[in-house]
Length: 168
Length: 126
Image (cartoon, rainbow over all chains, first blue to last red; front, side):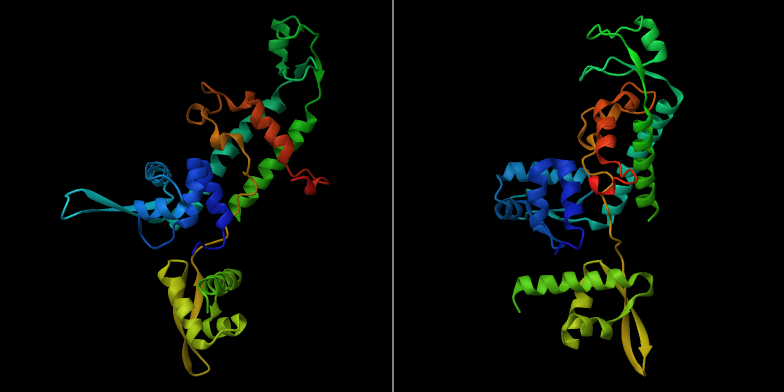
């Protein structure tokens, strides 16, 4: 049984290992399973399932135990969900994104921006625009002052939202 | 009871215990809320504890020993980071403010912020 945050688990699995990892997570429970069994239940090729499991293991979302087969001398691997780490993984992602957003906000607040208005072209800071003689180096149109209050407002709201989730 | 029915009972039980939060909930109250028998209720609680999802603490209630159940997991929300391009970006490992790849110039990240930020008066947009 996967607890309440099934969609959260699937989201984490998808980020770590893509669609195959989601299929693996759906069949995996607290009970240990061999990779052959997981591949069969998830309807995946064994090598694909193993790769997904390895990615999930590296992402700390699954646990692994190996046992030597007495007859063949080969290792057999057993996998189970590692729910203890879910919270830590999500918190780590949130903290990293938050750090980037805070840097973006600082950049937006400390600079004036100039934009040509062409979709696909980027905005330039005053220094950059000055360097290019206030002409867009990509499309050649004149660079005009750009009001970034919308970006600042959005960044503040996003930072607030992530912080609220981190503190919850 | 079918396997799927049992699973949904576990889900319901876990939900009730998680909602009870730090105060916890008495096992006897849980099975009444679930509409299950006391035997089923204690089996569910035991199984949830074995799965590491809750803890049980013995408590004397109305002269009888019972268990108070506490959640071990918290509801984790990913609402604020769903769709964030950083999570699947191939440059994520070298992206840092002032680094080789600088997030302040990331078009995808700023577009994601503009599209998903819960700006006041625009809450339903997300």
